[in-house]
Image (spheres, rainbow, N blue to C red):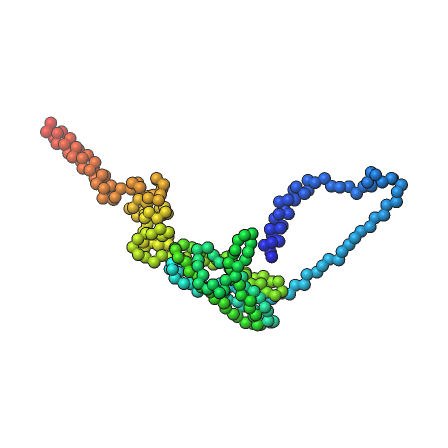
Length: 255
């Protein structure tokens, strides 16, 4: 609800210069009414409606592993707490994330929005005073990557809305010795070491020219020479100069 008010406030600020530029209407007698005609002024007032606020002390938290392997099932737990002194009925809303499959079809509900059928999870719960409760579901990712969850929502019977913090799961690969499609050095370093053709220019100095880097962006693209070669290139001119100096000294002594 606070977000809606913030968005409305921003819209008002954006439109305010245009609104202030509108020419104000003066409170004058219409030109088609004679100057001596009696005019009655009346006002209509409506009492302000008061909104009854019933505060509650609920909270919701999402828990799950921070990392999981592709193809494995992950248990996701929503922890609910009622720190208040009265029993409260509430509804949980948890949306489904792209890149995940859900093996619990019985828990899935659907929202129809402008031709879209949006899947989500929902639970109706009753939280006694001073109680904790958890609900769980399962998810599975087929390919490596980062899955980010938006806030889970807890809406109580009095219209109060509570949100969990956003969370994420890092999905890693199952190593098989090949850098397969969809794998890269970030989520699958065992199969795609630094410098692999994995669609990512990692920019790491590893003595391998990364084929995903633009020319000049890989520190291994012929910029540095091996230490042994560099040392030899420095030592050869020194030896030559020393020999030349020796020949000059010998020639002067013979004279």
